[in-house]
Length: 143
Image (cartoon, rainbow, N blue to C red):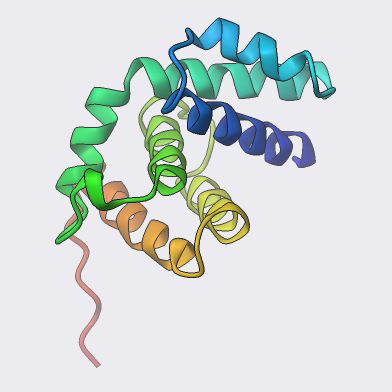
């Protein structure tokens, strides 16, 4: 699983850079791998996350925006948006990854690469997004 953690870190860095440079995904990944080494499995998983999240970004952005009360995408940091896109892609297109793992990994990435509030911000949006995707409207139990 350590390889997937590293792959998510790589994917985040490449997705983040794609917000600022006019490169296609393949070229961005090629440039990244020209400077860093990782096991083949991590490279493949990172490439799948980057390609999928970038290709589906309009769909993912619409889902994220629909779950982020009082926060337009324009107000979010590019790091947080990149993490949210990647996690939303995992929710929708990576059925072999438990949603709880996706959320935990995204929150950890936010804490490592984002601001001091990124972890809780990402957690809140992904919880709402997961419930929305699964058609659940789970209310907290009354105490």
